[in-house]
Every structure is written in C-alpha cells, then in structure tokens.
Image: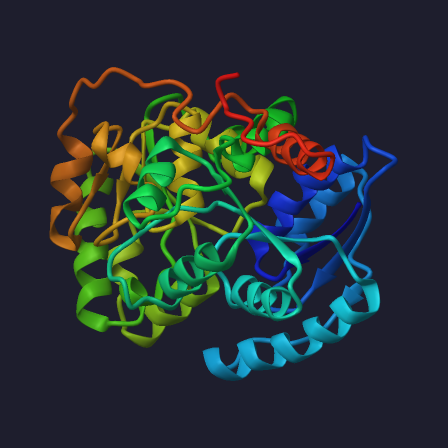
Length: 363
C-alpha cells in the first residue's frame, strides 16, 4: 500500500511525525511525504522529526502564503502532478488548511481514496477559510478519522455516516510520547513557583490586528497580572502590533519572554495555575495537563472542553473575571482517546486494504 501524506502548516508536521512513526512499523506500507511550503518552523517541527527519527518530505513545493485562492490553486496543480507520478492508494490529510483542501480536490479528481485526520470538527463562523476547508474535505473523504465523539456526531448530523471512526486525537499521542522530555529548566530561570502564575499565548489576527480589541485584551490581562504573575511567550505578530499601537505600558507588568519550543511550553504549562490563549492546539494541550484555559475566541472547534466546562470561551472584556473566578469542575478523562489514535488510523487503513471494515474505537 502506498500512502501520500500532505502537510503544510506547523501543526501538521507534528501530527505527521507521530503517524509516520506508526507507519514505519509496517514493511507493507510505502509512504511519500509532500510539504506544500505553506509554513515551516524548525523550532516547532524539527524537534518531533528528530526525537521520533522519521524521514523528511520527499517533495517540497515551496508554495508560500498568498491569497487563499492563489495558494490553493497552485497547490492543486502541483499536487496533481505528484499524484500522477507516485500513484498512491491513499492520500492522507490533516486538519483544515489550504494544503488539506488542495490535496483533497486533487485526489478526488484522480479517484484516489482520501483519509482525513481530524474529521468532523466544526466551528463558527461557518465562513472562516478553515471551516470551509474542513467541511469540503469531509464531504469527499473516503475515511473520516475523528478525534472525538462530538466530531462523529457532527458528521452524522450532516448525513455522513459511512467509514467514520472515532480514533482519538493524534496530538494526544504526541503529548504522551513527548511527556518524558518536557523541559522545566525555564521555571527556575524565571523564578516561577507551582500554581502561582498564568501562562498566556496570543496571536490570532482577529485579536491582535484590531487596536481596540488588543487594547481591551491587554487591559484585562494587566489587571490579572496585579494579582498573579502572567507569563507571555510573545508571538512576533503580537509584539509588532503592541509596538505599532503604542500599548507597551499594558504589558510592563507581564513576564514577557521569547517564543519557546513545545517541550518548554509544556513544562511551563504543567506547573501553571491557568492558561489564557487563542490557540487551537494549546487550549487542548492545557486540558491534557489538567489546566483550565480561558479561550479568547468567539468559538472553538474543541467544543467538548467548553461543554464539559473544563475551558471557558471569553470575550476580551471578561478575561479577568474568567481567570480569577475559580470553579470546581470534575476532570473528564479520555475525551480525545487513550493515546493510540495513530495506531488505530494505520490499523484501519491496512485492514481496509484486505477487506476488513467498520472497526470501532471500543472494540
């Protein structure tokens, strides 16, 4: 069996790393990896490839960020060429990027089976580019691997019930694999004490690119920082906007540090009190570590965490209230599986190939 895996954005490198680690166990699978060029950050991605000792992409298309239509179109053209050369049995796609949609369309036109990891996630507003990408990819996928039961239910509500599997989340696989390597050195460097600081990340365009909105967020966080230390690994985009809008005074009481790698971020998070973030991945990693996250977004694709009241969606002017008002909520385990999502995904694809169908998570 030949699998063509397509990655483009930073989180997709991480997901591919753990899935490829599972693929490498089987001599009957030939995997070709394509990097579209959409994003790459060795600080984020390289560490997973190095630790898991997996191969780098065979193809790098070098298609960098531009308008959505232009980027998707260029990717579609180049991916079709590669598929015609490689003739894969399955195209493996992750998440909701332009790389995902381009890969799905190219494979569909060539009648190649599509496997979509993170199928079934839904988020308002429905006209977001990412939402368009994930919905359209789900519509034409042959195998839909959902990280949660809610994802399965979302697909069912849309009339998609065949070849839908709750596998769990490959990011939880990564979390467990990397946990023994978490780096706690920075806690001592910053003189941080357990449960006596807030971890914060902020980078979304809808939060940082609008002067008034960013100002409201920073005012709220500044109020928090007067009662408990706030640690902010500052994103370059956020740093640029704070300077551009003249908001430096609002972060003077925060402990501002340069961006940190995954292992350091997890080490910091494990010992923090709570998390404030607008990151899709980080709000989930906070859950893995048993930390409540105040999510500065109008909606989230990880709605289970909000439904269980483990995380809180927050307007910008409610951050202080949501962070400082503690609520006792019973932790819910295994929302995103048991750390064997990659194993299930590859098992399903291999067994489907020899005619075994409808493997379920609980079997």
